[in-house]
Length: 258
DNA sequence: ATGCCCGGAGCGTCCGGA
Image 1 (tube, rainbow, N blue to C red):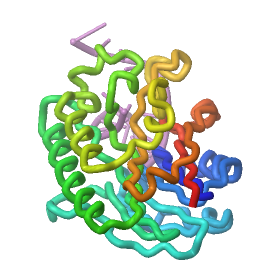
Image 2: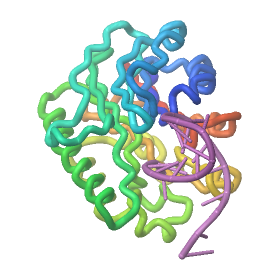
Image 3: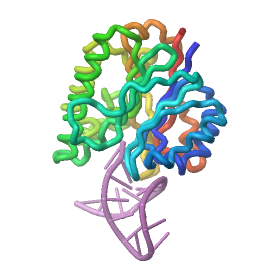
Image 4: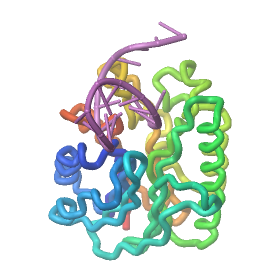
């Protein structure tokens, strides 16, 4: 059994006590982190290694930043940027092999405000991501693309959909891009396990969103066809959002029969 | 329509986030 998780930490150094507490409790085998908000030299590799996690990371000062952690000391980095735009300096993607699977860890752009250049950047990034995903499927190996997609795929994934129709996380162009991705042959793991449930992975710091359970489902696991049949469990560690000094996202996990 | 809360940078008060 392999337990794989994704967690947008919103600042890895400010969040380190919470991250370590959750890792000790949840004991995932593989973890993808987003929004490190730290330059490469400030990534806390040592305390993570003390807990038994090897890591690779793609950091950047102040913003973005992604990392892959694995209990197994076999991380083989494949890339640390999405192909298709050499001008794109954001640290939003890192990809590696561990446990004989390709793990793609992503932090898709937020895209607000809509309309505007940030929204166009998001659509463009999504397009590049989808063509990379298609190439990964063609390799015919087990792949998981997981992380913060900054998309609520359907109305079930939003506490109040009508408020979000012109939001960059829910605009029809963005939902359409996510649907095109799924149509390549990927399985949305949490939705596969719970077809009709409201599932949230993010609660804004503003307006007492957590207290009102005004959540969004933004963090997703996309499984290649090889892995879809091995999915045995999954969930959101919602209680972590209620801890002191919590991120605005909660950790999400799946278990594979491997 | 706006502010509400956060982390980071850096030391006053922005910006970006979703």
